[in-house]
Length: 470
Image (cartoon, rainbow, N blue to C red):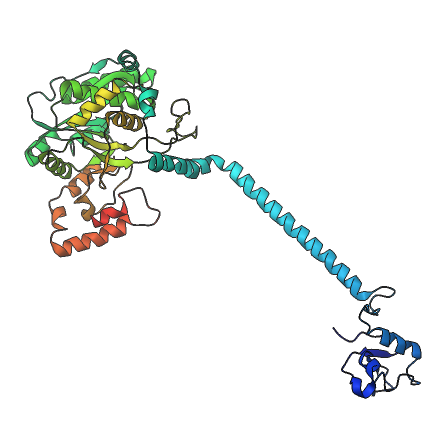
């Protein structure tokens, strides 16, 4: 702290004073320095305590300033009040204001954060909280015994819930044939062009028999047109189409998203009644591409191994019910109040063995089928039947494959193909595709390419990254 000043043209200098030379009192007495322009000398307070230049009252004031309980002298900046005390009060006041300001900012930040959470809670609950709950249940508890009690109904009630009549049926479709694969394609009455594209590409039974040497039976499963005003005209077109190709099975339920479970039961019931000897059953959407040569080779290997309880596809494990009412996958609490669905495969494309198809049919005959999400209902049937799905990295589920020969050599299914299905079929089944990954160099090249295509950050709508190294 600088030298405090006193009136009369002197300031106090609390420098060192030798107590031996000047006496003990001098050790407690500050030296005074003349501050007017007329004197430049330095006077010790004890050396000249009663100088004519130093009034006695100033000397006393200077001496008193050195006592242990001294208070800061009056400063020239605060007339009539302690300057240091005033500054301390100001500092305290400013610190108080600063603290209040920081607390206000913290309060406003907290309120803003809470407001954002309240506004976005539905999205946060859907994307974060519900997944945490469902995964915790799936991987910590993993018990779905409640499904038997909650969904079980009598056979008569289950039959009444699914009491639909056939409008188109082909009972002899599988008769007399050693069917490797019964292939159901879920279609809508108005999707004529999609069905025609499938018939001329991956669903062509004649091509499969000639080129692959196996029997595959393809059946389009559909209901009736949802618009009553157009239903009669569309139904007439459907009947003419089936008269030409003979590959459609239709029941009288309205063909809509909320009747997908009815379409699943149509497939299971028809397979049980008319094609129970097929070794495998596949269900796929009409905008899915199936690499039939790869799939047939794969299923032939599974059949030779004698595998049972076979269910393969893109597996959803620990998936939470969607509680947002604006989503088409919305699941109300009164229909499914639990935190997690049982494991299931994406409905876009999956394969089960013949014994699993029969188990699913038997389970569906005693369960409440009002749950309208078909792949979830199938997961419930499988849980009741004691069957678990297996992941296959090249079943895309709802994902779409990148276009590259190194991908075509391994792919099983890819979702979202309508306009490009003919082109994809031509390039994917080209014999040169398998040659692209032949040899050590070809395998290394394809590993690098697949890693670049499948391992992109935040790019999930395709095969998983681990497929690059399979």
